[in-house]
Length: 193
Image (tube, rainbow, N blue to C red):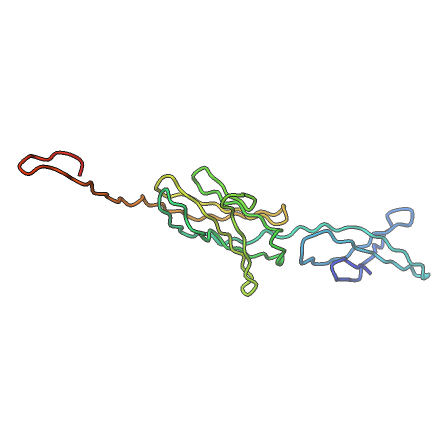
């Protein structure tokens, strides 16, 4: 019998042909639903009733997260945005603690923000009701235009997935400030208004 270390166990099959010195291989199968390192145990009993066991480790990497991006993000030039949703994602390997995930936002203007950034970091939140994670960030663009925003999410430092959205940056609105004019009646005025 094989105890997989993840709460599952199954029967194994022993090879009919020995490898030499009376050794055989034991094969089995299991579907690990989470990533991690699992200590497994193989217990074998021969026809005479002699029992032996062996232990090993299975290192299981999770599947990459599934990112949903494709958003159009609205910005005003030279203005720090409020917190914007840049992407959402789900984890087909199962929900891990938030600290198992890291996000990096490449804003498309030569700057990046990640979950370790101390000023205006990327933020990951989780909604247990929907099973959806949300990546948010703040940014200030120096110039108007259209930018490709790339979001990369890493799980457990191993699996990486990427999605893109578009930032549309409009020019700062023009705000006229009238000058105070003082002049003399009958004299032509010329100056800043």
